[in-house]
Length: 289
Image (cartoon, rainbow, N blue to C red; front, side, top):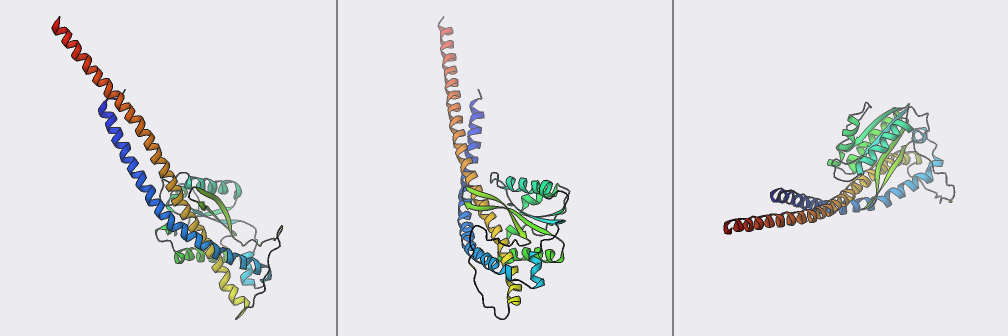
């Protein structure tokens, strides 16, 4: 059995850790509230834009716009992997990295795959592998907003139009609620036309002014950039939710550990007192004999 001093040191250490995890839980809960509001406000806007794109996809006849729908032979792939900058969020990052690694080794085996890590954890993981990596945007979460997200989208669209990549996919965690994140592998480019099977899609007639081509030239890239921005907001909200749950669980575990340590301390203290009494009684008996 450990002596009293060792147990006291362990109790103080666990107490300190519990205070840290409790504080981190509260910080994550505050950040989650802001991130959750941001993604919930973005989703209706993104869904409406995607609905417009779906309605217009069959009527696009401009060659400069058809490139976004061009189903080429896949030789070069860009995989955008979205993680967090920090850990202590359970399996949040590990799940994304595991899926991305599987895609590289299985789904895109034999293809020229370039990784675009978004977040420090993705950068650190793929830096160890011998894969082409674009690290220009790995610190986007330091200043995440629409402007910086659209900057990434502009780069991806330009590279796809030039033929540098034949396919672009995004791997990230989609936010459902504080305790649940949906691991998502989302095709980004080329745009997949909606088949409309199983449900009759509502078709709308649009009046274009000044012209259909000019409007779509601006609208399609904006829809795609918005889709990318939504994925980043989803990941950010998921990160804070995962960290809040992880820190809550860590705080509970620290509490259970403290109970065990205090019980051990009381037993050790009782044993020490009993030993001292026995020594006193033994000494007294020796003096009286």
